[in-house]
Each structure stands twice: as structure tokens, then as C-alpha cells.
Length: 167
Image (tube, rainbow, N blue to C red):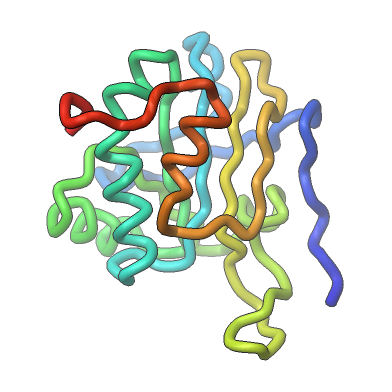
């Protein structure tokens, strides 16, 4: 099974401009220019159980992440209209971005061969990246689990575990 090109700590993060669930263009360069670190996470499909859990976990942690200087964007191949329904249905407060042609997924190595129920398939590789204010990758995590991932990422970033105040 061949891996797509993978990003590593220290690599320059591929820039992108994608349409959000609200119809706005969002670019990595503009977010970094604001001096913030950006958590870019790739997930297979809006409104599926695992992806919903992960998006809700990021939403629940958003205040703490923002207070620590992070912006969170979730990227999927879903169209903006579906992302808007996802946001509305689950009360999400993170920014959801549409990459229907998978170009950004591929630039980050978040699309390619993976095992699904023991079979090799082409698909989205659930991945998370932390991009520093200098535009370089600080954390690159591939094949992450939907459940528990945000708590692990918070530990990796040196942030406290979520509390009831985060919700």
C-alpha cells in the first residue's frame, strides 16, 4: 500500500483558498497573516457518526483553542450547502471548508490509499495539521481516530483537558 506524499514537521504548509459553509472564501495565508496558528483537519464526510463526533469535539474545545491562539478549520469534499446543513444540524461553531475537487486533500497527503474494513480503497485519510504563524507545519497527524482525537491534540499542544466551562 503506497502512501500519498506526506507532510512533516517543518514543511511549508500548502496554501489554499476554499469556500466555507457560509459561502465565504477562506485562505490559509490570510489566517496565518493574522498571526494565528491554524488547526486544519480533514474528515471524510459531513453528517456521518465519526465526523460528527470529531466536529462536535472541536466545537466544544473551540473557546480554549482560540484563547490559546488557534483557529480551527475542518475540510471535507462536501459541497458548501451540505456543510451549512451540518453546521446547523449539530450546532457547530468551527469553520467548515469545501474541497470538492480534493486538491487540498491531495496537497496535504490526506487523500489516497487506505484500509477500510480490511480492503484497500481510495479515500479521505482522516488527518490533522497544526500550522504555525510562520506558515510551517508544527504537527502532522495521519490516520487519526474520530473519537478522542481532539483531547489528544489538546494534550499534544500542552492545553488542559476540556472542562465544563469549555462547552
